[in-house]
Length: 380
Ligand SMILES: C[S@@+](CC[C@H](N)C(=O)[O-])C[C@H]1O[C@@H](n2cnc3c(N)ncnc32)[C@H](O)[C@@H]1O
Image (cartoon, rainbow, N blue to C red):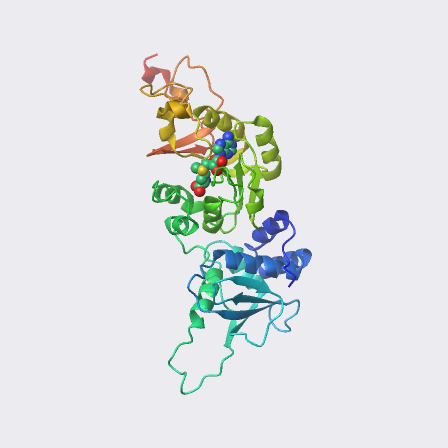
């Protein structure tokens, strides 16, 4: 079987942006990328999203056509779920197809990659292969469940909560930590935007074949995002569509410059890397300028700021060389317009908000240039 793929992340980004537009725009984008490549990229995404554990074996033929009849520019793809739970994408159907799903490709592209609320099933026709009989009537075929889960992944891109995705992906952000509740509070309103996200720290430490749990969680939580991860260990072989892993040391300015050349401007940055205070501070200085206005910079595991073996300081709470001390000084920066004779910091005018939780901080980038109180009120 030949597996087609959208050739570059750039094509996928184009498709995701087009998915927010009308059918004609989506159809034009599909044409320029190639129908087969788009069909396989979309169905690969559907498979990445679907939890098929425990599902009965089934073979589902998707006939994705160009739109209203005459149904031009179509492509068939088959999803095979085997008894042992393995899943494959194929281009040819066999005699044992359980169900056939016919739907317009632009509608499927919009449902899978479009903004929240844009999914629809207007053009969908579902046909079961097995003939109904008096014996089987009223006794649902076990394979119905497999088909339901696949179709749910198309129709309900925004259904799962971050905590659910966190547990499903195996990230320690929920359970060991309690981070998803805070992430969801800040991220749910931008969940359907075509964001560029970078997480420092892929997980799995020295093993190049392990990690990627939180990146998969972000990919699933943000169905329209391009997700990048960096790690000091080369874990690039774990890359998937919409999820690119690069080797980089967060403490090395040359590595980070190379990463930014690839990612371009960022909407969300999450530092879950070494947690060494000096690295956290240096990484912030290098990456914060690449964050777009309105973007969010998140630092996890701030408890290490109090631990000397992570370069933190025990019993010292406002030392600028510790991550928490560094962040506390930024709180003064939020109020810089009210403070006389303060040495200006480069972040004063562009950090608009800060939110602190247990071991976790969110820094919101934006204009912080409001005027201070008048001198008569300040007693000057
Ligand atoms: C806590 S794990 C990341 C967990 C992952 N983000 C998750 O939530 O599933 C930390 C990762 O940071 C990586 N790391 C350690 N030092 C680093 C550095 N200087 N630069 C980049 N990555 C580093 C480690 O190899 C490890 O895989």
